[in-house]
Image (cartoon, rainbow, N blue to C red; front, side, top):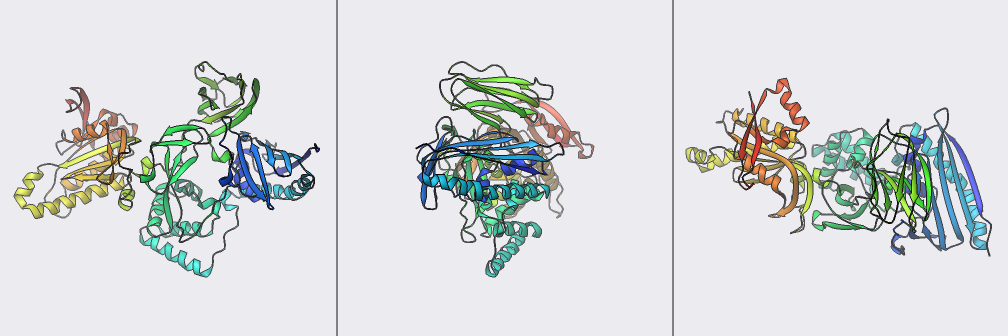
Length: 608
C-alpha cells in the first residue's frame, strides 16, 4: 500500500547572519544529537560507500531496527543543506530534509527547515506526525534558537551542551591534576582551563581534542595549549593519539596511539582511495581524556555532516546526463572542482576581478581544461555527461591551519623530551615535508681534550650541549641526536634555525661563567626530508640532511654556513636586514662531497 507523503515546513527569524550560523547548523552530527535522533550503529553498517558517496546505515529507535540507504549530503555554504534517505527497514519508506539560510535585510537570517516523509506501514503513519510533526518541531526550533543565542553571545558550539556535573571526589582529583600541570611549568590559568574542559565538556567534544582549535577558541597561544596537552599526558589527564587524514575528505581514517602503529599506506572507505601518508599533512596529533580520569563515548549521529569536511564549499549529487547551477559566495584563493570517484578534476582560482560564471563537466573520457577563473560572487554549472550518478565537489585547496601535524610536532624539543620512545615501525619511511636541518660541531675539540684532560673537557662538551638544546628549544626546534661533539637538529622555519645558532655561537664564544670560550661550527639547509627510525629514535634522512652535514664542515666557527635555499627565505632576508641584528652575509661557491661535482652557491652569515 502506498501512503501519502507528509510535508512539514518551519521558518525561524534569527538574529545572526547565515555565515555565522553555518558552523552550528552544518554540524548535523550534533544537531541530530540535540534534536533527539538516536546514535548510529556503525558496527552494523552493511555496505561500503558507493563511488557517488551513498551509504547504508543503521540505528535502533524504541527497539525497532531501522536501516536505510543515504545519499551524500548536498550543500552550498552558507545557504543550504539537504539529504535524502531511502529506508529498507522500519516504518518509514523515504525521508528528505532541506535546511535553507537566507539573509534578511536587517542582517539576520530567515531559516527554513523542511521535511518530506512517506510512511511504509501503519506504524509510520502514526510515528511521522508524532515524532516529526509534534516532538521534532519543538526540538528543531529549540536547536535553532539555542544556536542563534550562542552566536550572538560570541560562544562556540561546544559551549551549547550543558556542563557535565562533577562530584566532590572528582573535583578534588581534577584540582590535583591542575596543580601538577602548573608544577610542570604550565601557566595556572591555562592549566585550570584545560582540566575544567576535560572535567565538564560533553563526550562529543572530548573524543578528538585538537589543541590548536582549543587555543583559537580560548584566545590562547597555540604553542602554549599544545605544550599544556603534552604535559597533561605526563600527569595522567590526557592520552596522545595520531589521526591519519584522507587527502580528499580530510577526515581521520585511522587513529593510532603510537607512531609505531602507523603504516605508510592507508585506505579511505568514504572516498574509495588509497593514499601514501606523510607527516606534513596527513598525520595530526590529537588528544583524548585518559580512561582512568574520564571514560568518554563520543557516539556518532551523522556520518555526512558538512562540518566533517569544512574545506568543501559545495557538494551536489547529479543524476546521469543532468546539470545544475549553484550560486556561490566565495573567498579569494585557490579551489578544486572534482567528481568523486573519477580522476577528472579542475583547478579554479577565485578573485574579485574574475568572471561571474563557469562550467565544470564530468565526462567519461577526456582531460580537463586549463585553470578556471571565477569572481567571489558567482554561479557555477555542474554538468554530468556520464551514464552514472556523480557527486560534484568544490573545495578549497588550502590545508587546515588548525591541525597540529606530525611534521611540526616531532620537530619540537618538548615532544622529543617527553615522547622519546615515539618512533616509526622499523623499515617504515614517511615524508615529513620541508624541514630546516642543522649540524654543528665544536672546532678544535680534540685539542681541548689534550689540553685540559678528558674529564674536564667532557664536562665542557656536556655544557655546550645544554646551551645548544636551550637555544634550539626557544626557537621551536628539536635536537635530534648528538654524534660525538656534533649535534643534529631540525626546525620548521629557517629563520628560527639561524637565530638559534647565532645566539648559541655568541653564548659559547663569550661565556658568562668565566670559562674559556668555545668555537661552534654550524651549517644548515632546508628541503624535503624522510622520517625513519634509527637506534630506536625518530630520525631523518635524505639529500637535505646530507647537504646540511656537508655545510657544517665549511664553517670556520665564527659564522653559520647556509644554503641559497635558506638565504632566499623571506624571513631570513628580513632577519639579515634588521639594523639591530648587526649581521653580514658573504656568498661563495663550493663543491660538496657526494653531490656529483656540482658547485653550490652558499652564504656565510656572521656578526659584524
